[in-house]
Image 1 (cartoon, rainbow, N blue to C red):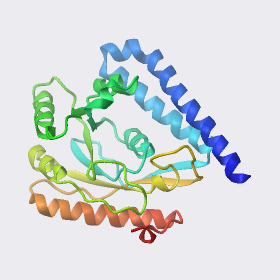
Image 2 (spheres, helix red, strand yellow; image 1 turned 60 degrees about the vertical axis):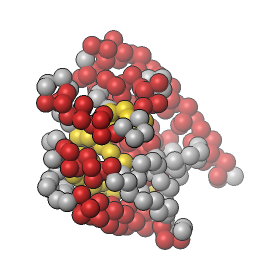
Image 3 (spheres, rainbow, N blue to C red; image 1 turned 180 degrees about the vertical axis):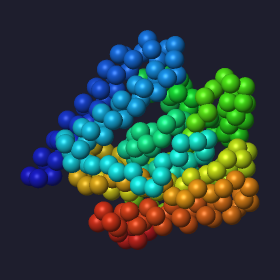
Length: 246
């Protein structure tokens, strides 16, 4: 009975979350159409709305640990569900995500992602997209910010081990900027698939920055070791034992 009630609350939360996306997207559309600042303001408002309603509707609280970066950096983050996207975007001043090009055709999300400077990529053409983004920043056609990349390339369920893709190391070399690893446990409470949400404290933790100039292989080793260790620690803190899943 308790699970049925939790599922119903999760469903109501899910419905209002997407309704809020549509309403905020439409209300801010005129400003967003002419101003990246307008688009970012709308996205920040949406993130705060979802994080606030998650707290009292489904009991999912959120917390940011470490120091959110504010300068031009690359954030190499663990990705478990939509919730870590919202927490990171809300925590830093000007996040822009590397995203699949197909998401540009998603209602509301696609338009706003384009306006805030997210980088859509086709499979195998990530380097070309990043070079264009860097050139646009240099020429003043795009605002600088914090480029967020998910090093495993997709959402990974808690406890599942997935390799870190070499594209993160390539971007680190190309950009010549610090890389800030980010760990999380959000998938324990907000799974990557399905409606059911579970109450608890969802955390994104920003780890110590990796300075520019390190060899690509060394950076990838540091990322995988530190992000996985910190994420495992956060999941255990949440009562989930990641080593129980192969």
